[in-house]
Image (cartoon, rainbow, N blue to C red; front, side, top):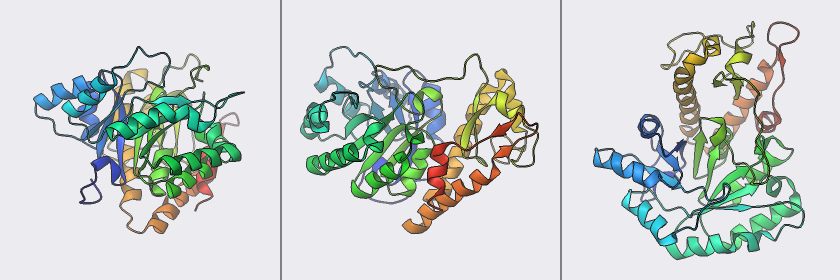
Length: 344
């Protein structure tokens, strides 16, 4: 699956991974079978991977300590980097910090100073979870970009918002600008927009398969969710977005293929995911279809063609939206999708 033969780490070669929790060794193995790598979240990640390596697993792995999420006990910095090395990390990542953008926030350079210092000392990528406003506020975006160019370090970004960080006006364009200006930029804990970042020359994108791992949430806010809906979230390739199984179950339309043609489903109907007992099947569907999309885009050798191909995918998806059956079942494309579609 890896695009190039080079001395660069696997996760710096224009590759993709799935972002998985440390307590799911089975999920690490399953995701590594289809993606270029896995990014394992949490303090226990290196320990889990060491056990897998002792059993013969040789996949590429990164470790996101996710210290940007809530309160974290005092970190043993030396120990964190030793653990990553001992677990055979593809490259080293700093523990991570959150870069706020609220009223009276400190300058970007001040907020990342300690993390950048650690990255420089240990030869690691600097993990930064940024409030979405660092993308959407032009002055703040310029400030961030100048600081990245000043520090000259590999950066691994995590986008943060209570909902979709890329769903705000200008967010996609701002991310594209970063991928074009910053070498060795990775995007971790992201939704399918990470494949868009890869289309525009990001070094790596790690895609979350559950809502929790498709973006970060600022420490002082609460994430959005669909209340009382326990059905699986399903990635629908025709629509280039995620939908609850309960929503899909209410569709009756020819706008979207009602069956999945890939190996995960073998022609079965996608409305079967209305059954909450099929969550594990939905997970297999999601990672298979996202891998199909990533491979489709990354297999295009010409960068300009690759960008247009992703834009065309999104533009075609927008055309599929509308009434999905009854008059109350209209769906509208989210703003992230509309932004990507403009690159068709």
